[in-house]
Image 1 (spheres, one colour):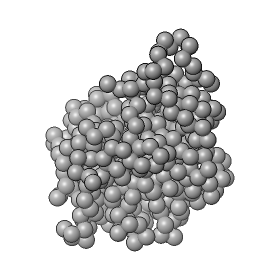
Image 2: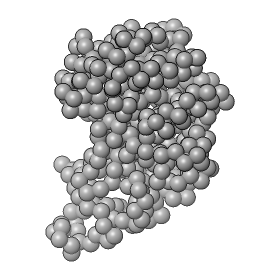
Image 3: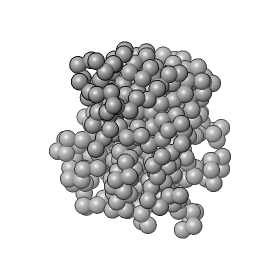
Image 4: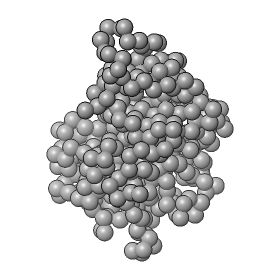
Length: 388
């Protein structure tokens, strides 16, 4: 049974800036958000039944949604010993992530959708909100049932297809006809399953850039909103294409932890986008967590925690508006994935997926998932079965 919790005197970003509010959590949901919730109010709850949590000098925000995580491990391109192990629960919690989407990458041979789904179910049982994409880099792509449309329609956790690779030497260089067929299956599966039906697209450093996607859009009537090209800050030429794509209404997903110098870090990219006056509602940030990464990362492995680090640096180092920055990992993502307003939003009736940040340095203080406390004072309280 979920306990009743009252977060007192925290400064709320919902992600819109809402000022000091009390947040009442009942049954895993946000039951109320008011200036001052006392125990003589119409809620009729005995004070002894409530866990009151002081959030003075702290920010209360929606939990982060990471739409690109290699939960079963990425890598493998340098041989069997380069296969990255599965993601640990503690790595998710200490990153402020309360909802994630798992996916496969280049390796659709030694890894498969069955193991991806099993890992997502395991994380869900351990308290993390999880979804997955069917597919991987290749086209035709890997599935569980034999067809993308069947996976999306019939498997609850499958909300789209990804990460389909374009403009990358590791891709299968899909032609326009193949992309049309894949997009059609994805869109139809989304409609039949009442899901987002997104096509999450890995864009590499290849010379074609976004052209395969642009040609697909030009040749068809697919809604631009269903496509989520990612890694668009990996090099400057691609980033410039992404700016034009965003101006045309397209989603742009930036990858946290970009430090190669060939592209833009998330803080630098966000500063550029805001300075040119771009509508930030279509901009998102994901971690590419537990996937293979450059030498500047931990042992060549991307970290989910880089998401929080980059968001923090956007605010503290670049002095970008906190509300706009937070939207890129909360409400913007939730809307694309058709999870809003249950996820990515603090309001009455939303899921109580909440993070609390210390005001002075934006370090993680608390994490609530479904109203349960998963981290307190920066310490992870809940771990996976085999984690020490």
